[in-house]
Length: 155
Image (tube, rainbow, N blue to C red; front, side, top):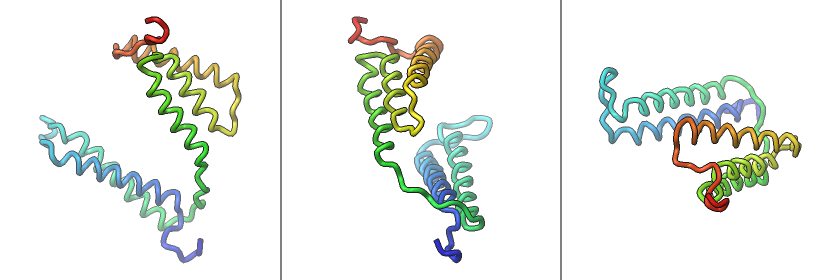
């Protein structure tokens, strides 16, 4: 990138742009709801406040990207991105029939394949730990209507 380019830090620029867009979207979506006041918050109050703050952070990131030099953006690893996205889709497909435990384990195992530092032993331990944690928090603690093991396992 030439030294006279307006954007000196492409990473900060694009992160700022994403934050700015997400914040602006929250503000646009919330404008149809009642705002209320700090004492009696309406449904738009909190999302609008957070959206505005997120937009400000994004704008600051964009300004910073024009002032400080940063590293260029490396090409996307589309294969790895596809592995993570595919693992999320399979999680969604498994959740109802197989249950939370198998779905989380497949999600962790599938998305970990995208790592350059893939180690099967660590993945098994992490998958078991996250499946147990998810079950304790979401099924036991929060009482969400999820089964640890679904109908495919005879439940």
